[in-house]
Image (cartoon, helix red, strand yellow):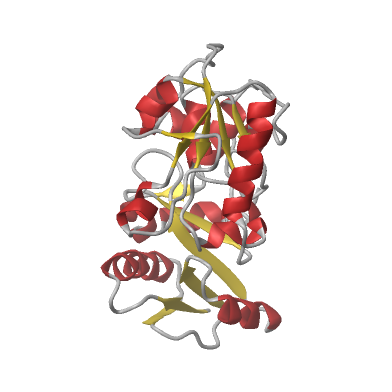
Length: 270
């Protein structure tokens, strides 16, 4: 079996994780190649989903696609998600058993805080324009911010808008929706005064749910989709244990990938 692992030469991060993935596959008898251009192989491994044409061609040939991306829990630079099918985040396929709570307990248990019932503002989360996770936004994320702000205010919420720090850092336009007030500081500081968090599908929803703030996510690409409301009137506080347990099995460390432990888990019979 042969794997084609696509990683940009200019990206140290892609090369590091791609190299580890290649080493893990070789421990399971795979022939591997790290390249900048996809070509015919049994398995195509890519970082993110921007290479849509190559992913589509691989699937049309009947080949497997594996997507590596940032993790969802904890330090997202230390953990990488491993999924299949060519989708991203909540639209991806995650394989292997995900019902053992030991992994979440060992690495992430302190992140899970009790649900809050405080009255506070609605925290509207900005995302980076053009991010691949926003494909379902229809290209008008600013319009969604405006409409959501107006709808929240009509329900009696004071609205605070937090633009994505990366968007601000890149100098991308981050207009404050009419009727909202900007909020700075750390994400945790923003959570501390929030009675509700609202996002399209940002990974911030994972952090806010863990922090115990009721959260609305309106797109199924959100990794917090199982434990969030889907509409502004749906403020929920569900049990989070099964969700958190499963989420911990969707991401892996560099060592776990390099040793082949990750590949053994995601390809085991369930």
